[in-house]
Length: 366
Image (tube, rainbow, N blue to C red):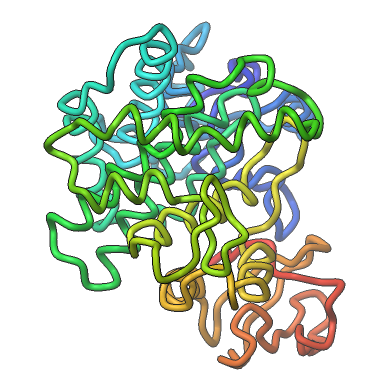
């Protein structure tokens, strides 16, 4: 959908880079709009932008008035990139809305309606294995206010996708995905003040949150269509191989493999998303942290599967750095997959990113 910047509201999702007179976008695609973006677009006299038909909370975006065809065609020669009713993005945002309703029902004491969850999540999981890398871009749509709902849906999609990529059969990766989306259903039993607290939790509050895997397990333990492995994964998704996790402090030999798929997905999305008390981090920077922490805590095979899916740039790829400069990838050192050799676009200077730890790749442009 193409609209004038004056029609934008907070929560709109930019679906195409907004370019000015520079080589870099004024506002990159997948940005969730805030008032500052509307001001920037006005200051740069941008006449039209491409946006999704839904806001980042899953609600439909209805502009206050549609652009006239002549006005729209005069503002750009590009072909509009309309979203189809069944696009992956729209399916995802619909699922977030569904999860929000389910969560309210669980909070009120209703049981998990697994058939409703399957109707929404199974088609989305099937779509995820088709769109591939788009699964790892969903953090762009999350907001601090609706983080919990985005997080649960993305956990399901990422864990199911990784299980598929690691060779699980259809039934298994669907079960993993369902376990992922239900892993935090027990958060509905945690005090709402804790869930929406703006700032670090106290020790007592954190201890309350650490009970949520147990609450989640109790909500799913009697669902016959969930496998025993899926139920264990729900209970164990915050356990760590070295016994440092919760709620039981179990070690590797007692953990179900499904749980580690969800654990890694949980960590990745949590670190790349906007939170009430913490800013989001760049995906490749997060990946570096995961690589540093993987030994002793997370399953090495799952981490390697994530790395394989995330490092999709190669020689010739264009990237944007943390200092907002763009560069071309010249060589990928597989011992340092997140820190290739690059050549800056503005002055052709060549950097070995592994020797410049103050910089990291913010995103892959092309």
